[in-house]
Length: 190
Image (cartoon, rainbow, N blue to C red; front, side, top):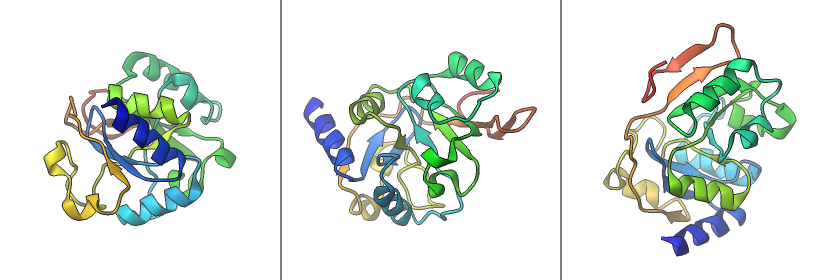
């Protein structure tokens, strides 16, 4: 497995796109700071550019580098639920986050997956990676390797095997509003 993880990190750093397992579902990712790769990922997924995409980090510090003056609740939720199936939306430093990632808005949604492979990839790349599910927009989420669509797989540079331990989508919470709001109820009950 180490060889394929090294290969995936090289592909990410060369501007490529990789499908990889997380605790919740299979994700499709690229470096957050590579605009050409981000554009390609949106095109592959057929995702509207106005729809923000979740981003995965390997530490609280990595997320805090991009959040803009996050309210106390953000740190509290990170400490309590990360690593885990909670995506935390908060205002971001817009100049550091390419427009489609934030759906042209002012916020970003970060999650720290509770999955060794995903964390190893992010640490190896050194920057956050995109983390939407590995499927065409509007199609079923792939929770198992067998669920990955053959037509979809053809469009990426590498697919990492593995298992998704939770097998349920993450809960998404918007902390850019007060009081915070649960946008999607998933694996974690808030």
